[in-house]
Length: 105
Image 1 (cartoon, rainbow, N blue to C red):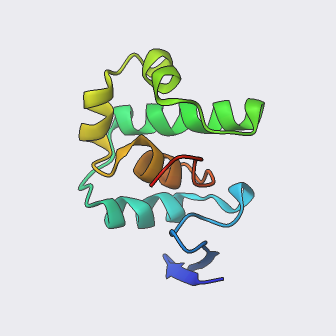
Image 2 (image 1 turned 45 degrees about the horizontal axis):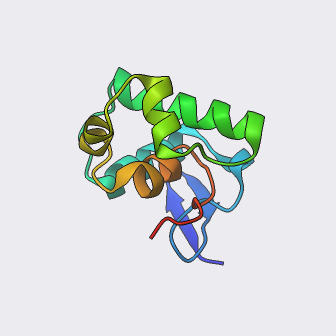
C-alpha cells in the first residue's frame, strides 16, 4: 500500500489516494487533500460538507448519496462541485477520510 508523507505524518493510501482507515483522519490529511485538490483556502462551507460526510459515515458506514449530501448541507450540487473541483465523491469524501464511494470513478 502506498504511503503519503505530509505535515510530519504518514498516511497509508489505496491506489486511488484515499486514506486506508477512517480513524487515521487528521487535520494534516485535510491539508494534504486540500493541496491535491487545488483548493486555496477552506471555508465554513467546505467544513460543513466534511462534517456532514463524516457524521453520515459514522452512523451508516457508507458515504451519503449526492442527493442526500445536497439536502443535508442545503448546497446545490453545482455549488458542491465549486467547493470540491473533483466532485463530492473523489474530493470531498477523500478529504473527509472516507473510503472511495462505490460508483466513484
